[in-house]
Amino acid sequence: MRVEPTLPPAVLAAIRAPFEAVGATLADVPLVQPLNLILDLAGEGLRARLFVVQAEGGAEACLRPDFTAPVARSHLESGAVEGRYIYQGKAFRAAPEHSERSEEFLQLGLERFDPPATDPVSADVEVTALAWRAASAGGRDDLTLWLGDAALFSAFVETLDLAPILAARLVRIAKRPRLLQAELARAGQGIAEAPGGGELADLLADLPGEGAANLLREVWSLAGVSPVGGRGPAEIAERLVAKAHARRTPALTEAQAAAIVGFRAVQGPPDIALQEIRALAGSAGPALEEAVSAWGARLSQLKALGVPEAAFRFAPGVGQAFDYYDGLTFEVRSQTLGADRPVAAGGRYDGLLARLGGALDARAVGCMVRPWRAFAQGEA
Image 1 (cartoon, rainbow, N blue to C red):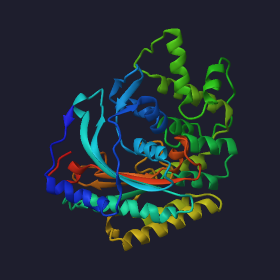
Image 2 (image 1 turned 135 degrees about the vertical axis):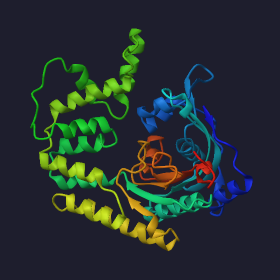
Image 3 (image 1 turned 120 degrees about the vertical axis):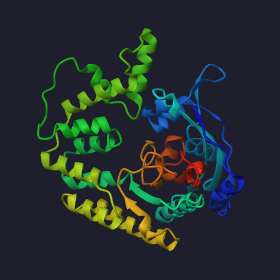
Image 4 (image 1 turned 180 degrees about the horizontal axis):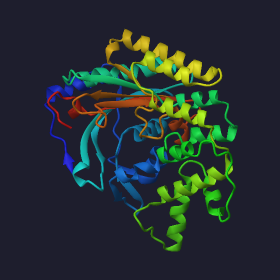
């Protein structure tokens, strides 16, 4: 496992300073986190990146891979309606197939929780600008700010005049590349005839969230069965669910599939990228127009807060490795380090609070910075 070098104290203080300047409360969350909580919130796909340990009492747990969910849970337990929290500590990511890529690294960041009446655009901008300042404080001069939007795909799909069941399915699988690619691949095929023997697939397809993988795992446990061939319950459940949905839902037309492929490929300066998305859209969509207008406000405010316009890039799917993001997403990237090692990242995750038992209309947005990556002399 790779352990990051210690950062010079003055550099770390400079990177942390933008977060301290907003008067955030220091958050301290346990190093060991419940495994089911992390998987339920971040998605089964993260399992392979976790260091799983046996917690006291025999329950499965993991070393914290991130601070967002634990800080959010701590905030809800406090009973506060709003708050800003700064954190700093070690996080851990595993890479089973390439042990040299497993990491123990320092992470710092800020989580902001607001009441429903708060303007989400202004809150998005504040957190994004803080992340940019913190990342820039490490001394790198090759940074770009990549912006995305987890909610934009849903607004785009509304313009394509799809059958409601197909539109809902596309939104549901938007962050699951294999399922989405399978849906695109059957474009123009109409509705498939349902073959026999699909009872299990149909049952799994009706379960929300990670329920399919969890049920399959429970059945295997009760039956004393272990999977073979290297496929886990999440991948097997995903394949069965994909087959069930393919039988139930009409297919995209080739034109609709091409529009979605074009949407996913959009990237570049925000003004140009958003124009391309408008051009790819089908019939007039008020949700899409509202989302694009909100981006105009975000970009103007980011420039007013000193983030250079020349650094802006936009791609709808940026930064959505965690399933809980449901609005703005962003990454600060270094040309030297590349797109797969962002210096900072974050986004809006209002829905996460409700999944943790909070109010349905609460608001939340946050960011994290990898200080060693922000350091001009850092290499990872």
